[in-house]
Length: 305
Image (cartoon, rainbow, N blue to C red; front, side, top):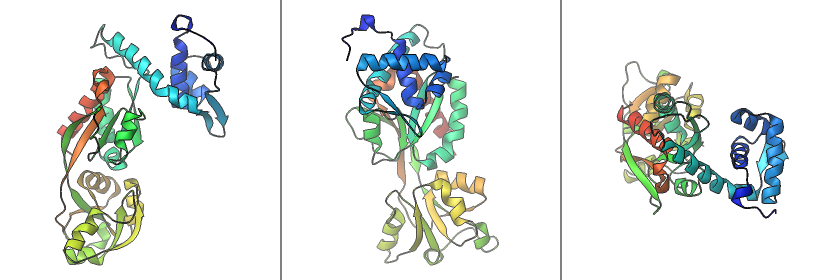
């Protein structure tokens, strides 16, 4: 590793590092930065000299970061964001977010229900700012935020960490979705008996037990789960042409039923409502880009479904 101080370092190298880590490709990094691929390759050679490490190695799927690169990523990203924040102080209302990207952690039910609306809302508030949707859930979200793998997250809780802040966006409930062809003409609801008699699709990261099973157990009942999946987007393909039923969050049920032509019914069980929360690293709340995304998310949830 070369012995170098900040006065000798070309800070543009850090922008190349960030782009390479995000894009996993020299050609895509070049497009993102508006430079030639040879310029990116030259910068990578210099970065390797500076840090005494390969940083990125070629694989069948592009450039993969080394352990050293993964260790450097949060430090370099934070340094660049501090620079961007300092420039925003010159004109906090300038609204030029070209080249910035904010990573939002969420499960695909929130992405299906709110993703398009959020893109449109953010376009008006922060032109040029790119959203990156990344899958997460309440059991892993605190770690993902703390390790800077994501910048913000929408989940049903999971933000009970000292260095994280949170905002309640609303409350969620549960609905049932089925193939409309499996219902009687004009049928608008299922009894508990009809509900239990149908095969069920379970949406769960674990794949075995869900909140429905707990509610049925309290009534001395059980259900037959024919399949489990962790992806809400798969439901139309798993339900169409069958009598199976899935019990999912209301926002996802509305979106899936509307786009996939499924029927949405009230859940016949008394299931508890749950909080929908937005979380972020407390130190990031001064970043104008993060603030714009937070405002856009709050606006989307405030508009109702």
